[in-house]
Every structure is written in C-alpha cells, then in structure tokens.
Image (tube, rainbow, N blue to C red; front, top):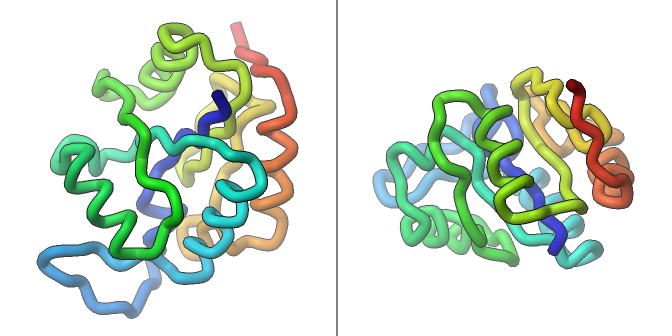
Length: 146
C-alpha cells in the first residue's frame, strides 16, 4: 500500500486563504486539491491524516470535508495522537509495515528525509516542485534518521 501522510493546514488550507469559512465544511485551496487529486490518481496512494484536525474531527467528519472539497479519495485512516507528528508517523509506518509513502506537511519533520515534502504554508501543494517531489518520495524506500 502507498500512503500519503497528510497535514491539512499549510498543505490544503493556506494561511492567506480569502475563502469564507463554512460552519459545516472547511474550504481547501482548489489548486492544492487538484494537485492532490493528480497525486492520488497517478499513484493509487491512500490518505492517512496526520493533521491536528484529527483531535477535533473523526474520520467520518474528515471524509465529509474531503468529499465536500472535491478530493477524489477519502481519508483511509488517521495516525494515533502522541502529540509528536514524527512519532505518530514512525508508529504508523512500523505498525502497518508501510514502505512506500510520502509525508506532506508545512512543519519541519526530519524522521524520514527521503519521504518528506515540506510545503510553504502560504502556497501548499501548489508550490512549483511539490508534486514532483511527492512522486519521487513515493518511489523511494523509507530512510529513517537514527
């Protein structure tokens, strides 16, 4: 199974977004969604949510939000909450025996450097080379820094 470990804020929801916030849904940047959909279509990867949104929203609610925003693949799972994203991803990779994955986040994460794509929080996935970096990461075997 190929996995996209996905943060939401700074990847799909941008800091400078002027879109209105709905009470029942959270608008994602349409260009970022289009790029995510291309990644999903080209790789067949599953989405695993790493975002802090998992603390407030369950998988059913996240699925609704992703569908409402036009993401072609609903979130498959969420990582456990250890209040440390690197530990959460490491736990998931080891527990689920995942070898092919990419981490999309605007935080600095160093645990799997070959699999990490850092997004600028005001551009998210629409930053020029992010799609290509994500595709390359999905082709790499994971490499954890000891």
